[in-house]
Image (cartoon, rainbow, N blue to C red; front, side, top):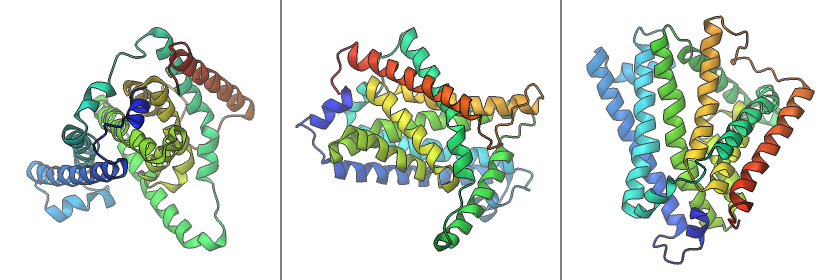
Length: 313
């Protein structure tokens, strides 16, 4: 595998810890520049002041709230998760550009296994989503719990606002900004770059996968979604680790986000009764069935790349 070889490559110029620090610096620079440009663009397009634009996320009553939030999210994602990491790669790991995306897995069997494992995980993960959403902390953590609950209430209100689609055009915009861009940017940043750097630092691929998944989950600043997003990140990590092709977790990430948006849109059109904003898990039997299907599909996916193709883990 590409990044397993990189982990053992003695020619690596940068120490892994220093490379990880540089990656984070480029991320935050890209995020700052992206957000700054977004604010300037919003000021020019909508005639809002700097302070009014930057504080808009706290109040969704502004007539231009939706387009401004879309612009802010778009430029933040492009700046932080795409431009920043790509500039880092260009300066320090230019050879990685030709190895992140490759032809591995472009066959019907692994693609079907990826689809099956992702969908099964989404269904089985409903149990963790419900449990984490209703978690009650001990009295010692009441201050943190109060903050986390306030943050969760705001994020739920923001998510509901951004996923209420007045038209098909708004749905397409949300699909681009909430599904496609995070799939591309977050997988490049977390799985394509951070995960192999952590592997080089820690010397263990599985610790790197779960460590990256934890950081991925923490980056969303949503305590009541921490565990389900942790396991989701681990799934993406193994999809990349076994295949060596970043397009595989990108597709899985897009399926997860895009399908949720599609079901939300269909619910608003009254074409389905499934409301994805509700945190109610499936029955125990259904969860067990989906869990077994997901594990089976993931093991078959691993077999296709690791055993059938003779890749040494």
